[in-house]
Length: 335
Image (cartoon, rainbow, N blue to C red; front, side):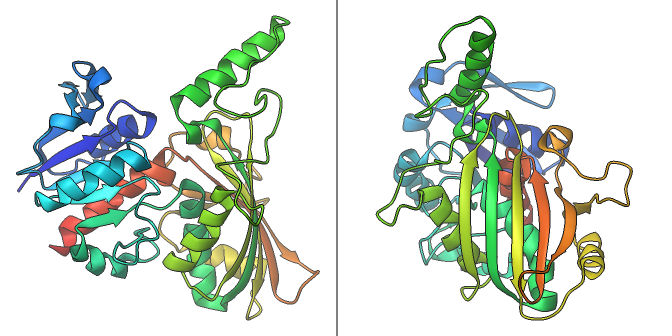
């Protein structure tokens, strides 16, 4: 049996990846509708060896659609996801709009597949934030084995997390520097080329950024509300791939060697450490890869039962599109 799929935000970075991954993983589709705003209507997007004409989201009838894979921005999702759900589709939403809704499950298939049962309350499933996804995949086997008390994470997030305009801004600013032009910030508040910006999303009343708050709140919802999380999120001049340096304080003793074995046995994780000829991985090396890559695994001797490691993932794939498609795969298996 094939499914009728609608991809909302089909012309964006994540929308393109969703279409690619649906084809790569041979998802059982009978029909795919590519949806976007009115300004993109008539454009073509690729789905395997086919070209799909983009249709207007505002006028689309979701009746008969089985699954909606949505990545258009939170305000658009707030309007159209409930309409699609009311028409009978299950919406897998990649925006922040529904993540903390108590009636909407927040799913990472390797971590909390059991939460899928909650989706019938609103017919909406939320895809977590990109930086949260890769972190909780890495944390899951460690938490099960030794119990995580506290996480301190510093992120180094690529510009693709802000969309195509941000990627263009990094390219144009970099080119401009070599041509002795003054970089003009647009997407970001300050120059991103040859720079780092400790500011992702809006500042909140407690001086955290909203991106940092997301990592705290989403980790608690997905993994365990008792885990304490301190997040520091930084935008770096990298096109694709998020990196995280993660420090854990555990309930029980766990050696780096034991942690490596846990990760090697866990689906969706690849360990490349100093015993490998690569020694460690960088975001450049894992573009287009599906796994979460873990390196630099070592003991933290400043706390009891401390562990440090480096975690890298393609934010457009596992951090967004792949996770959404994996949720869809989990959904059809559960039916």
